[in-house]
Length: 210
Image (tube, rainbow, N blue to C red):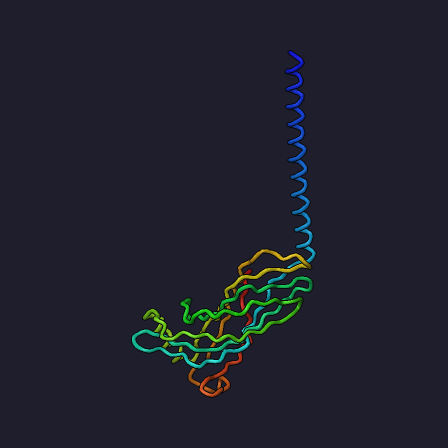
């Protein structure tokens, strides 16, 4: 074997050792970063926000022939950040109403805002759906529910949130909340009469997924 061949193999071995060293350093760096993220997450223990449906004011809720539903209501929803070290950015929140899994109002956009540690935000969006076509069986079910004196309307919140820890801000996470609203029909004494509308005090916890 010539000296030239020996030199070639020597440089090849050094290059392989360098690649292995770089890969090992990269692997250690990734492990350290992941460990730090896990450690911070374990110490801070981020908890998803808690939503409560405070009340619902019903201005209109009726079915017209053949199968059109008109809904006009205002709801008050509060959100509490239970975290003592984590802030929450609400980048986008759409609020709308559903009846038996069918959307019956247009989504109302809540302005983007920031929620500090242990803070509470309150929103009171109007939800409107004029002459929304519904399936015939839904119209029949609604008539039965109104005759029974109780209608379950679900107030849903769909949006994007980010977490803030110190100066670090996470990526966007999908937030989904479902707030059941049991509306009593037939007896105006079940609510507070506000002009042509009836306001129902609910204070109902919402199911939240993030």
